Image (cartoon, rainbow over all chains, first blue to last red; front, side, top):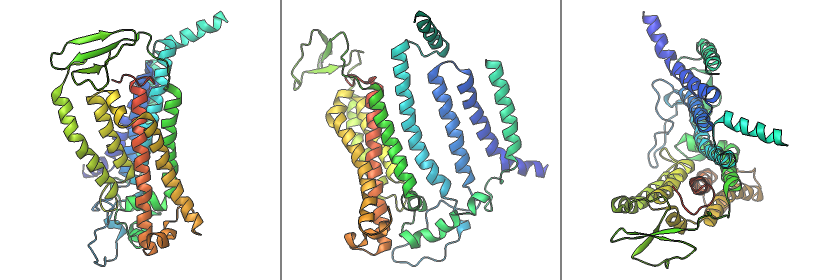
Length: 135
Length: 276
């Protein structure tokens, strides 16, 4: 019982990210509406970002900002006292890039809507097929 | 389609959950990710750069190349959005709606007639009618300067507290979007025009890349800010701290401009006459 409980605590966060990622993946595969697919991609991306952040966690450690005072010489810094800053750096840029790429995706969706008058993928394919037959 | 998608998703989920047992447990200080380079960053960053916030030091100094190209990716996304959407064609029905502010009567004017722009009694409104909302407009007018001030704090204080160019830039952009949402797109464009936004986006990238080129001209490696010490009049370690601040300002300007460019184009489908 104790073993399974500690195991749940140790791995439950990964399971949450797996579930979140699968929700996104399901939306990308199963949904026909392009906007919903973009939302699914973003959910998937959020799962990956949370996964990276959770890798950086260390127990009994604080945020990666070194305690310091003015003109005070700092004591030797122990790496186990601060959480891993590297995943934070990588995800910091990834979040902003995600917003920018979401903007490009929405711009493409607007163009598709202007061209075809719909965002349902099967209707778009139908219109493409008809246009090809006429040629 | 839905059934096959469910099967794929469930199988993948089972595989991933099975694989998760190979990962280090949550919060393990001895995990592989925490043993390679991150101890060096934690122990040495304040000696190398005199920046207490390790995330800022790694972002702009140790991994300066990465961050520079991330900035360029964001800038490219803004440019791509302009190329995809921006059109000069007007709406086919060239009608304008004006509202008499004190009575709320809406006038519809066709065939290009318009009121003088400095008219205080009338305001132009979007073709989708919106009510005149004094509370929303006044609140936004009051709150926007404080949001911008906070954004500048986040950028400038990124060395000592959580913050930096990306976060501050997004907050600055959000303040601009708040104006665009609370008033209309034209009011936002009067304050920060499309051309200014494009110029600022370029300026931010040029500040970042130019700092690197300056380092090369001062006989050091690209983005090695310690070479800036003679220019700034400080010792090389403090120069790295100041160099980080300079590139963070560049990142902040670029991110703010790109957020604004994206909003202007997406909200009006590239016409930039009427927003949401």
